[in-house]
Image (cartoon, rainbow, N blue to C red; front, top):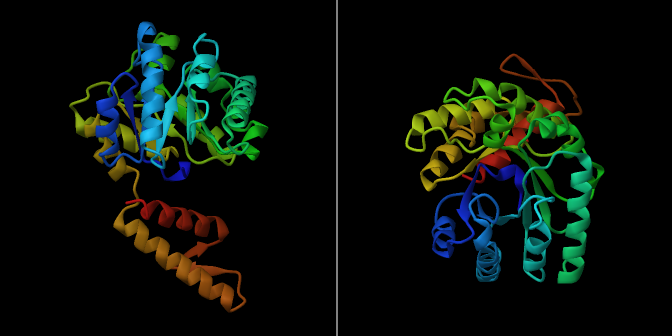
Length: 292
C-alpha cells in the first residue's frame, strides 16, 4: 500500500460484511473496516470475525483495519483477532504522544512475529484527534519507528472539536490551526501528506465537501477519509492532479533531464527558475496522476 497515493479511504462498519464488498467495488483508493466508533461494545467480537473473513477473502486489496484505541481495553483483542492474517495496515485512533507510537510499534512487531509476517511489514496509520495529539503532532509523525516501516498520520475533526468545546462548522475555520499543524508535522517528518478528517456537516452537500477537501489540499493534505460512498468521487477528483498540472510536470522533468544530460545545473522553464525541489514536486504529481 502506497500511502502517498491515497486520495480517498472509505469507512465501513465492521458489522456489515455486505458493505465491505460494496466498498471494494467503489473507486475508493482504500477501504477501512472499522472496529471502533461504528461498532457498539456488544458487537465488537462479531466485527472481529467479519474482519478475519474479509481479509482472508480479499487478499491483495487495499484494506485497512481501524482498531480501538490503545487504552480502550479492546486493542489487545483486536490485534489477537488479526493474527495470521494478511494485514497491510492498522489504523489506530486517539494517538496523542510519541510513546503511543512506541506501544503500537511493539504490538505490531508481536503481531508480525506470531503471524509469520516480515518485521515492519504492516503499515500504521495514526489518527490525531485531540488537542494533546495536535500539540504532539511532530512527536507522533517524527517518531524514529517511521524510519523502519511505513507510517502515515490522519486528522479527526469530530473528536478534536468536541474536546475543544467548539462547534464543527461548514466553513471549517475552526480547523485551520490543527490542519496546518498536523500537515506541517507530517511533511517535516518526511511522511506522505496526511489524510484529512471526513466531512460530516451535511453528507448530501457535495459542493461543501469539495470546498472542504480543497481547504485541506491547500495546506498539504494528500487525501481524505470518507464516511459515505458518494464522497469518494469528489475526493478522488480534488486530490488528483489536473490535466494542466500533469502537463506542466512532464514539461519540467523533460527539461530538467535534458539540462542534466548537458552537464548544466541551472534551469529556467517559461521564465521560472527550476531546482531539485521543484522537480521532486513534479515527480510526485506524476506518481499521483498514475492513480487516476
